Image 1 (cartoon, rainbow, N blue to C red):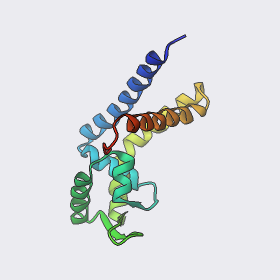
Image 2: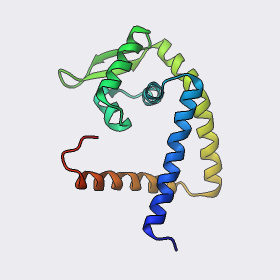
Image 3: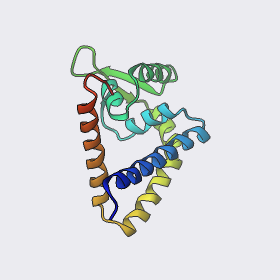
Image 4: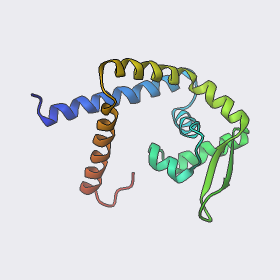
Length: 150
């Protein structure tokens, strides 16, 4: 049986390959990687604040701010008031939805095929296990590096 270090290495390599797939897709499609991540986050139809996007997708606040301003100027994003005075909710406009769907089409199709093929071999519990691993890894990281921001 593999030891925990070997299993951790396999998980990290698998997640690195997944991240790489999105990176290369963005690069080849001409959509900047962080813009692709923002569009992906917003395309679920739920309200998202800039702070939430930064925390969930690990994108620096200044980067999100810059992308949001560019997309507002392009007419793809609007901002509306959030819960607090300073919180802004990012919303895709109609043209933003069309742009996001076109930008995400290839990667979403690749995801669909990958999920279907994976579920042919594995139980859905693999997703729960990956989420659990990622959550535990963050908890342990934060314990060992107090004061660090994501």
